[in-house]
Length: 194
Image (tube, rainbow, N blue to C red):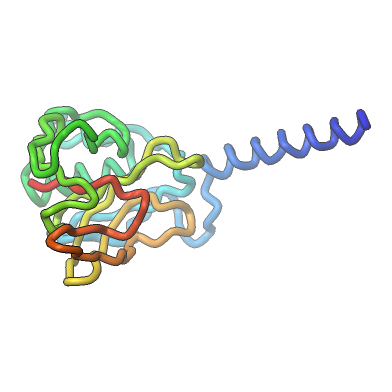
């Protein structure tokens, strides 16, 4: 019985170490960390390897903090800075922190100086909106992406750091029930708009 318990504990330790290492290293031999894999309006999307990989801090030429290199936050802040000429008052925070659940639908999120909409909302998502995702068991920081296409029944997003084998672009179903718009993804908290 004691040997079996030690074996189970050993396996659990190996799994935990393996999980931690897989979030930090590049498991996909097709890309190198920092390699351009996509772009939106000329703003590059870079490959990050494991979702927990950090490769230093990215700063704009004027010193504005864009975030940790190749993370999802760094891409959306860089895009808003370069393409939309927008600086967020609060330049720090994890992806999930971009959404403030205390703010009413359609009001200004002062930390980001953006209008915030809850999922679901009376406002339909638009191109260039930031989509904010909740944390998960395997990702306590959440996620952010940018809407680049909207139809009557779906949105398409572009993202950085979806994981070593994730895609930089994804589609989500969009529904309208009595004037209330919902992105069909339980992790999506809402969206922010300049």
